[in-house]
Structures are given as structure tokens and as C-alpha cells.
Image: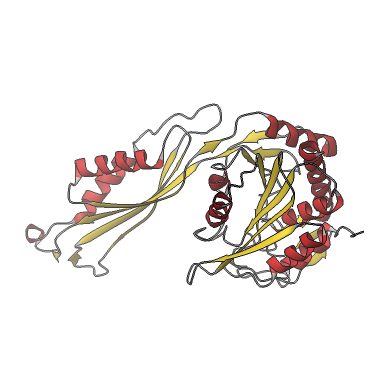
Length: 376
């Protein structure tokens, strides 16, 4: 009989791996070993080349048939940065918290679900793990590669739980049942370089870009709906190709991002923005990158069972939210209904990132009840 790992100990072992995207540093092997000991068949999938790769992903299955519950997460982390009170990759327990890069986002969550699956081994249907090493980066060789692998084998989960840190103040107060979409855009406005003392011989692109930005700032995208706040456009950078004080530049650039709700599609927003820009300056060029579409998972079996497990263990009734940034749920929603639930997110990506030891243990108990509710 295999002894289930302690989720805090397993989380600490994962934190000790310097798995800054796209590096793995042994994290996948630690998870694979724990899952194989719990009866899972594990596949390690390595994709891509530098600079965005290679990326190692883990896909694991136990059982067969339906219902099929998938747990999705990631083992990669953002760079540690400066100013930590201890080595960010030397896990430390201090004042009841596990401290280290990835403690919240999201190695402790992965460890909690692995421990839960190791305790609850006799179940019907299929339990699977979809763990990527490329969530914090461009995601080119991460979850999309996992989905491609599943599609090639006609494997389709019925439900998916993503273990992102969704709790706001206390464990269990929030479930994410959707996410806004995101599109980045770059606007280049050409001009004619010249001496500032002879403006009639030049064409300054900066005032033109300013008019474009003013127009975009006045653009009311929508007023939101029952699940989403209003979509918002933010200008994130402005620059020209000139550093001299007496030269009119030949090019002015703006960078912006739109976080949009399910009332829009990314391509439609790009087309609308291009038309607004062209109406002011036909020679301007617009480049774009859609990093994800908005989605929402309506109330149903998935939200109800996860909420019930949270309430049983915490006494709290979680709220459903679509706030925050994007996650890999934007890819997984193409497979099946998906929601996100995990630890308190107050310190994710911060210096001295930390997760409550008690919360990690409680999350693992919640996870076990989630597995039971779907596959018991």
C-alpha cells in the first residue's frame, strides 16, 4: 500500500526546483514519481526550441471511461526578483506559512491535488492531470501542446478544474468561472523627420498619434453583463524614434491592451480599432496579438460540486467571479466545462510569496471531496 505524500512536503520539494519558464529543473520528475506511486500512467511531453522552449509537460491518467475529471495546473514560475528575506528556491516554513517562489502560484495547489488523488485511489471513471511547464510564459508549447496530444488520441475530459490561486481573502471565498479575453496591439504612425525650426519641411507623427489615442480613450466598448465587468482599453507605452531635442521624429508608436468580456471576439475588436485608426491616419499600421478569448462557464454540475466541497470543509459559500487576468483555462475551455479554484492569491508573483500551511492541507481535503463527488 502506497503512503500518500504530505502536500506541504511535496510542495516544498517542488519549490526547490528552479522551474522559471521554460525551465523544469526536475519538477516534472518529482510529480511523475508521486503519481506513478499512486497508480497513474504518466506521459512526459517535451516540445519546442529556444527561446520559448523546450517545455516539458505532464499528462497522467488513472482509471478509464467516463466520467472523466481533469485537474490542470503548471509547475513553472516567474523569476524570483530581488529583496527576498530568504532564498526563494529554498522552501522555508515561517509563522505557519510555506515561503518560496511558486508557493501560491501554483506548486502548493498541484501538490495538494496529487496528495488528494493519492489518498482516494478507488474511483470510477477517469482522473487525469494536465500539468504544463509553460503557463507563465508565452504558452506556445504548454497547454496547447497538451490539448493537441489529447485530441490526437480522442481523449476528452467531461470536466476540468484548474488549480490557480483564486481565493481573495480566505481559502474558498472565490471560484473563477470565466476569464476575460486579452489582445495586445501596436500602432505605428509614420511622419517625416526634420528640424524643429523648419516644421513646414517635416511632418510630426506625435500629434497624430495623440489624436488616435484620444479617440481610443473615448471608445465605449460595452457596459459589461451579469458575469463580466465592462471591457477596458489601456495604453501601456508611447515612444518615438527620436531622442534629440531639435528633431521632429519620423515615427511615433503606441502600445495598448484590451481586456474584453464575452460580448466580443478578439478579431472583431482588432477590426474595429483598425477602422478608428485609419479614419484619423490611413498610413498608420496596426499589429496585434490575441492571447485569449473571453469565456464563461455557467452555473451547473461543475460549479455546484466544487462549491459543495468548499462549503463542507470551510463553511463558506464561494462567489463566482470572472475578474483578474488570463490563465490556461482559456485553452482548456475548448475541451470541456472548466473552472478555477485554489489558494489565497495575495502574494503571487511577489517577493516572499507564501501560502498558509493550514490552507494547503485544507485545500487537499477539499480536492479529495471534489474527486469523490465526481468519481465516487
